[in-house]
Length: 421
Ligand code: EPU
Image (cartoon, rainbow, N blue to C red):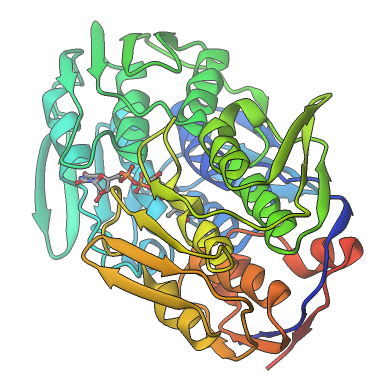
């Protein structure tokens, strides 16, 4: 298992590009199975989660090849509509193969995703939505077994849950509905830009979808979809992580391909705590040279403050004199970073789904443990601002969502060494 050795404090300065969005690429790759033939997905980051998705598609019968940042998926033959436990346990986003396989093959077995470091993550709404479209679904030996003997049929479906909309639940039902008979209306659909990207991919394949980007999607089923070429959007969470990196190190970063319109809540939160965020032809520039102010942040579905940036923002608020509060409304237990940041001299108190952050003058280096993707990113940020040499163990968590992060942050001033274990 690789380890990061990070020397701080550093001040980041320069230009850094973001890669394609992992969370858009994953459902788009799954959607490729809806059409016979070869689809090509461009701007796909080279991440372990993407490799697992490729492995999953191969196990179904697809031919999957990567060349640079392009992945081609030949879905002419799907002869094994099964999401095996050995693959799903590596990446729970594998669940988004459920809708496309059901629509394409009329039957599917996908391992039920298991535990997750960020808390309990049920898939009941995915199943409810697909049942509404006419699927018979039961759980057997840890697998979701779904069949649609009479085909799928469009319906009005409310897809909201106790924590608002569901991103991959919307993806699953949307993908299945593209080939269902008649009209499907998804009410309380997720509005995340990754869902918009998926919908645009499906439209290019020939799907008929209205209301893209809104909480009400209207899908008129078609008989066939065709394979296409498509370029994935830049990763807004990676962009937000780099924005926070500039802020926490008191530096200045130019992110030339950051879509600031997809990060309004983040930009607003940064501006409110004394960080400059400026739009500049296609991207943005982030800078801080004063003291960070305190903040009250609540994570919400898009366009609210993203849960996927909560941990990183907490690292930043550790340096704001006074008390800040972060309330997590999507995954109430997503606080694995709290204990590790505390090892770096942060002053944090967890109260249910909230954390009170009492700002400290300095963070201090310590050996810490990466626990999940975004929590690990938060530790990298904290380490760049902390005094001394921080060692982060279990770096594979970071590699799931950030491609060679050290090779991209070092040219703008970071001092990160990857040690092979
Ligand atoms: N939920 C249910 N029932 C369901 C589905 C979801 O109760 O059937 C609840 C969840 O427990 C949670 C809330 O609804 O409280 C929202 O979960 P959602 O389904 O939207 O999460 P997801 O689709 O499984 C995606 C991202 C996550 C991101 C969340 C929220 C991918 C591959 N994953 O997960 O990304 O945190 O949306 O925005 O797109 C990450 O990249 O680090 C990551 C975890």
